[in-house]
Length: 195
Image (cartoon, rainbow, N blue to C red):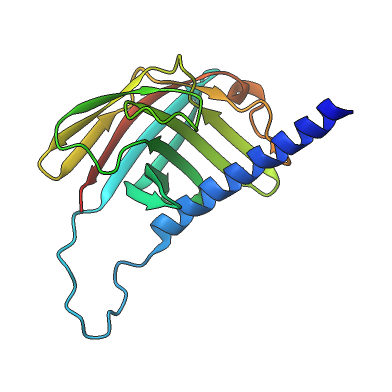
């Protein structure tokens, strides 16, 4: 009985984590850059970031193409992206740093979101559609991500990264079925700018 209770609590926590992560990503990219600032002169803005992400699992491609950028939400620092026409289809990579690096830096992907090593990151692809969750997550065998810094421009090539399908979606129904039940090989790029 105790294991059932523990598993239920773990599943609920995982489900809530996915919902919160997705909502934070949505909020990050939902702001209108043309908001009326009540007569205040707008600050110079960096160019918009762009994500061109492909995850190939079981021979099928899963793509995210849309806005991309560095964000801080609830004290967590991350690179976030979402599909241009679907804010609930997101990419996120969480860092243990206070600010983006000033020089090109390589990070190791891990599974543990409570890991505090500044050279470790976690990475996720998540889509919520109704009560269905399709997701892939990093593990310690996922590889590395290098942020190439050129002034205010930051780029990352996702080639060589492997993400693993979510096998326990908590309160959601799993969308990781068929081809998407397989590990996902990442390709594509992220380009964004420091503020």
